[in-house]
Image (cartoon, rainbow, N blue to C red; front, side, top):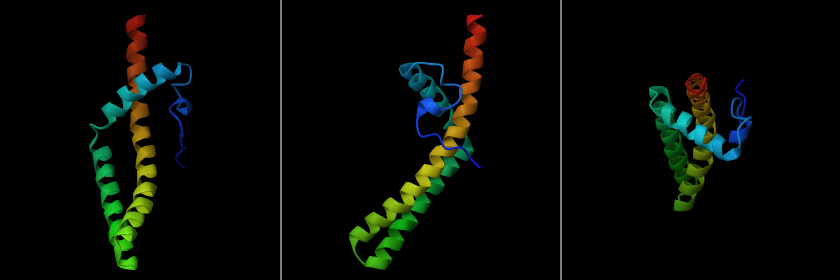
Length: 106
């Protein structure tokens, strides 16, 4: 089971730092994780799922607002999952970054 992190401060490894430093380190890890093909594939799947929700909403209601609601529900659910998936990769990059930072200051 994947652990859910609702805030940046809850991510292990970032807890000892102040909020501003946590955000800076998170940006380093998150930016690096977007180079992973699996993360890009997950984002693509999230877009497909949102499109399916839009289509389903339109088919059920026959109205534009059904499309918006369908896309919002399925897009929101899939983006929550993808966000946690990205966090998994970002944590790996954060660990490497913090290890390099510690070795450079020693």
